[in-house]
Amino acid sequence: MTRALCSICLSFLTFFVSFPAWSEGEGRYPSKPITIVNPGAAGGSVELQVRILADGFRERTGQSLIITNKPGAMGSTGATYVYRAPPDGYTLLASPNSPMVFNPLTRKSLTYEANRLTPIVRLGEQPLVMGVRGDMPGATLSDLIAYAKSKPGKTYYASQGVGGGNHMAAMLFGKYTGTDLKHVPFPGAGPASQGLLKGEVDFFMAPLAVLLPSYRNKELKIFAVGGQERAKDVPDVPTFRELGYPEDFILTVWSVIMGPPGMPAEISDELNLHFNALFRDPRVQERFKLIGVDPGGGSRRELADMLARETTTWTRVAEENNIEKE
Image (cartoon, rainbow, N blue to C red; front, side):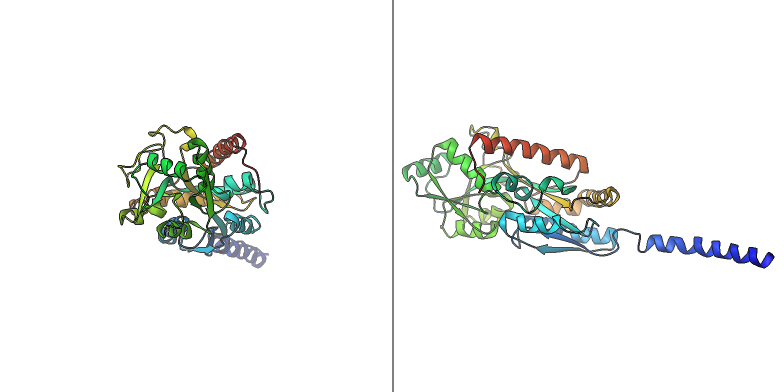
């Protein structure tokens, strides 16, 4: 009886000693690298933002953020990949506006449901700006409008693709100014900005970070900023609101980190905790500032509310301007 009792006690002791090792091993998240899908072209602003976070994330968790570029269909290709991934927290989406808000408004068939993706955290935000080719006559937005009216149907603007945020912004600009503008879509912000620098198009409503280096090198002009306030990096450039444009011209480009549908709350909350800690790091804040982006953060609920507001706003804009799905 004594030997049997000792054997039972030893079995219990072995279980309790071994249990923490299991919980800190296979049960710990993250226990392997996390893939973050960039649905845009390589080298874009969203990819840069994730790379800024990668070093700090490794320091906090011991795991890497592996960026995979899956461009195509205004972000739909990358969004679909994540939408179909296992909801285990090891495949995430770093999404700009288009896959989350604009694609559902402008595309007839999508292979993912934006509103079913799991909110993780807001990544960053920057204003859209009116970038104009360097040899464009004039120095103000009024000069650009006068130029476009003098050449109806022969003023060309770039976008990152049909139905994206900068495409819709340029269409609204054409409507408000009564100008006949021609759309030239490019496969991403990088190619579109190169088209502007080469003079293939007259203007590009682009994220500030995309055009800022060329603006500083005096290779192009910026006539207006789409934010609530003037941008610190281009303080002499007025906002659209200052120039008398309506609320629809509060134009910003934001990016968010999302997960597949059905991610467990404990994993989503853990990721949110880590990313918010990184956004409070002065080193991260400084590096975001250098690329002209305001760092993100905030709760998962705040992100869900923001996405709902943006969807409501742009649904109204699309309906009011008869923007049809293609």
